[in-house]
Image 1 (cartoon, helix red, strand yellow):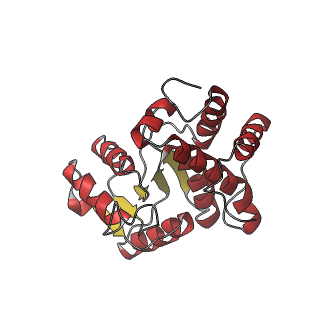
Image 2: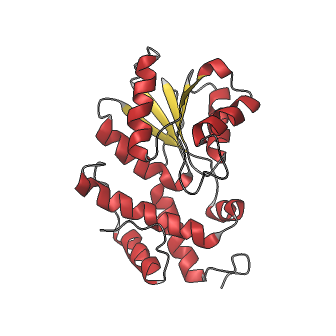
Length: 222
């Protein structure tokens, strides 16, 4: 067992890191028409979106998200509202931010943000999705399905796996989320929610092993 991650064995850590790396799209930063910050429990999404705005990558930013069981207590007024306030505290002008406060899943994050942009008279051709690191691939696949006529780029805080585990403070929860998001990457295309993504054999084997080890709290029923 690793000295710095008391609840995770060395083998489980290696498997989780493999899935962690797969979840990230590794897109190089480049200018886009608009960014969408996807709501979650991770306020680092808002901080990274603010940093990218200040670097001049986009002129407008949507924060999207209502609440979920994991965020209601942390962000009682909704994920998007708290993300917007945090971004403003970090120097993003209020007038550069659009708010989508109702979405409860990734599909709604995309479709409702698109509606907010349209209502504001914005019709982007390129969009940057800013998310948790392990949500990049799923958000990309969802957006490509629901908004196929635009160019999608992804970004997240540039954290190493060790650093992200420490920032969240709950190793089992993070591994549960990594496994749950990978299940959705695999299963959602069959339900019409996302485009299909190739899953390498070693990633699939790591996923199956972590499920056998009990990292299953974020799995959806078949």
